Length: 275
Ligand SMILES: C[S@@+](CC[C@H](N)C(=O)[O-])C[C@H]1O[C@@H](n2cnc3c(N)ncnc32)[C@H](O)[C@@H]1O
Image (cartoon, rainbow, N blue to C red):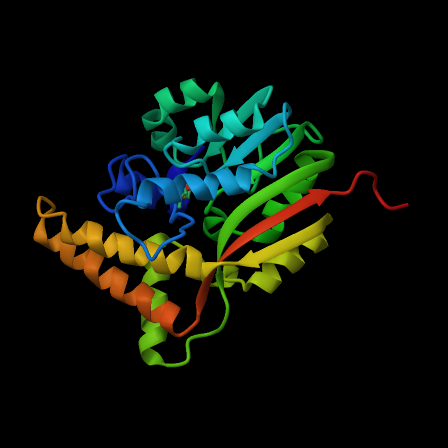
């Protein structure tokens, strides 16, 4: 697997296993919050997001976690879904290495691979979970087609994603959007609204597609908590702190202009193919 060819792998290689803005060590998601975004709630919020998604997985089956980050989520997924086999797939090999003990705790099989070409046999998986990774994928259409291919009939997909709901209304927002694309190695072509993401899932053959927009319970409190974390990060070099502050201001602009949102998506593969 050539990681250099994948911008997401390059981004996560450079963030390393100790990203100073992570809401809890080892966790890279934005959390699902009940409050306005405090450092006290942060460890609960990152777990609540994974718990909420994992609740939809079938119990006792083969589960595939696509884009598993540093593996912190896998013991939690294992506790909830009690899989007979858990596969943790990630394009960033160093993250799988850094998460080795957590993957061991989860009894998960680490696999270096690309969501665009799942190295999994057709119709062998009961549930796919993907937490906050699909906005990195080259194409959500291909991802959903791959999910349909690997799921057994009746199998479940549960995932979260970042959506882009409208084009930038002005130059400032356009520049903020471009900077974010560059920072995270994202493709402009792949930006999609929540509605379009659901449509792509249906076109790929998934049924019972349910999409919930919840940026107010994810992105907004996460921004508040990350700002607090930044204020407390006196040991981090000034250049990094300034860059992070600039980054936060840009994301705040994109949210204020209602350009970006956060999406929870649940769907399943039909039990039998339509005749
Ligand atoms: C924002 S992180 C989320 C990590 C983890 N799910 C969490 O919430 O803590 C995105 C993850 O997706 C992985 N990723 C990005 N593109 C990928 C791809 N094409 N195939 C597999 N994994 C990918 C990255 O390496 C990273 O681990």
